[in-house]
Structures are given as C-alpha cells and as structure tokens.
Length: 412
Image 1 (tube, helix red, strand yellow):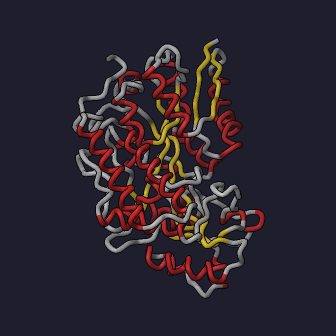
Image 2 (tube, rainbow, N blue to C red):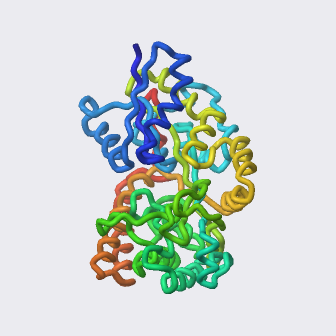
Image 3 (cartoon, rainbow, N blue to C red):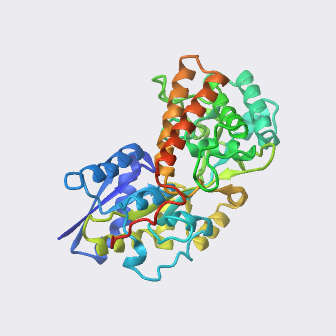
C-alpha cells in the first residue's frame, strides 16, 4: 500500500478535514493501492515545517503534497523544496486556469511550473443594507477609502454596542500583506521595487495606505477578534455592518437578511483590489513523486477544483468554471467579476515568502501597540523603516530575488 501525505491549510476551519477527505473519494476509488493521510496545518506551522526540511532533511516530516499560498511558490522552488512539474509532465499547460494565476505557478516570469492553482479569493466589501439605511448611509459610502472611513465613523456612533462597524475578515485575526495591499496600491504605493531588489513600503504612498487600514483597528471600528480574549462575531453572524471577504457567502443565523456587496474601495489614484490564490505543490525528495503528481493533477483538475471551491465558498481557478460560478451567483457574481477585473496578485519573486514573515512580525508589533494604546503614526513610520531596512539587508546579502540564479529543479 502506497501512503501519500497531504498537508492542507485550514480553509474552512474545523470543516477543512472532512471537506478534503470528500475531495479524495474518487481518487482513492481509482487507486485502491494508495492511501492518503491528510494533515491540516496553519500557514505558520507549515512554513516552519518546510524550512525544517532544509535544516534537518533526514529528520523533518516529509509530506508529498502541500497546499501553499501561491506567492510562496517562487521562494520554495528557489530553495529546492518543490518538484519541477514540467519534468514530471513535459509540455504541462496552464491554459485551463485563470490567466493572472499563471505567474504564481512559476519561479520567475518564464521559469518552470512548480505549483498548480486550487482555489482563489478576490475580497469585496460585504454590507448589511438594513444597517446602512438605519444610519442614513447608502452603498455609495463604500466606494472610496475616504468614504469608507466616514461610514465606519457614522456606524460606530449609531449602531448598538454589540454590532461593530466592520468585521475583521483575516482568518488569523491579524493583518497581512494581502489585507493592506488594496489601500497601498490605490494610493500609487507598493511594497517592493519592480525588480524585487529593495523594499519600498516605507515610502509615503504605502505608509498612508497601511495607516488607513490600521486606523480601522485603532479606532475600534474593526475588532481584533481573540486579541482581547473575546470572540467578535462576523458580519455573517450578525456582529458587524461591513466586512472585507473574498468568498461567495449567503446570510444565515442572526444575519439572515439580504446582503449587499461592492468591489474594494477606490483610492486617490486607482481602484485596486488583491487577488489571492492557494496552489498545490509536490515536495522534492519526499518520494512517490509520480503518485504525488497524480494526486495533485486530480485535485486541481478544473471540475474537481471547482467542487472544492464551491464547498469552501471560494472562487474556482479554472477559467470556464470561474465564469460559470459567477453567472450562478447572479448579482453577487457581477460584483466579484468587477473585483477580479480590478485586482492584482502580490508580486512574484523568490524572496517574497521570506520577506512576508518580516512584514507579519511588524504588523504584530503594531497590533500589540494598538492594544496597549501606544500606537501612533510615528510608531508606524519607524516600524516600516526598520522592516524595510531589514528586508533590504537580506536582499543585499544575495537572498532570493528576481535576478537570483535559476531555481533548482527535481533533477538538480
């Protein structure tokens, strides 16, 4: 009996494991000599375990297949952790999948394919029309970052204490690159230079974008669920009037009232949303490479991937299935279509996975300061400068970047 180890991220909390097992049913029926053991890991523990393989290759656990945020592909491939899928299937085509995702399947603009898309999200602003009307607001109040701020201020004054202006849609109850990307990009800012050689998010446009997002938390409009020991219900649970969320959701429970949705607010210079995707990749040196690739192809097959995306409430990655899902979602689907047209991915260069960890640490420092009531704009500026300096130092030492050597393939 062949045993494949599949590590996945908690895409649907406690429901993730049974949902993944359901996706494996047909594969196991077609491969009676194969067993698949599923482990659900957080992004942090997954990252740590993968890097443990670099330090202790003989001792660390060796999954055959892993689910990763798509922007980790270049980093992990550069470090030699991923199988070159083009070597396992010469001529492997990315044509079935949403074209913008192709970039994150590769370790560089024209490199080999190291991962395939599984599901994706394009955050929009969900809202409760009844609560907006109650506070004298129209959906147009969510069209820009400036008007969203004012809407939150009005909601905070008029809503009952049990309902927050906006819920924190981050599943880690924190702040990530993807969370702050829209307000940064909409102001004409960015996180890194085009060649991936230096960090630029401490510059004015990016600084003001990050500050605008953190203000939602600082003012108490967006609660930090769990940070204070209290669990704040989401919009879908009746606990908020607004929420950034990248999934097609239907109201239930206390929020069983009609919901509206609008694309990410526009900024001073552009309307820019973020597209996030989760890919599957095979780990190099784990053994059973052909069998692992077979499972990877089964799970990412357009129809199969669409079924998993539907179970999660996320968007399918294959072009035809995505179009069908948006048509089925009717008015909400039209909002998501507009969001996709205005969205972009995080940059694709080999150092991003590592630099993201530095950014996450800076955000955690700032969130602690907010909870201690010691946060202000100057502290944010200092934290951004320190983080950018650390990233620049790493890049100057020859860390993986756009001009780094070619990633190691399975044959290396």
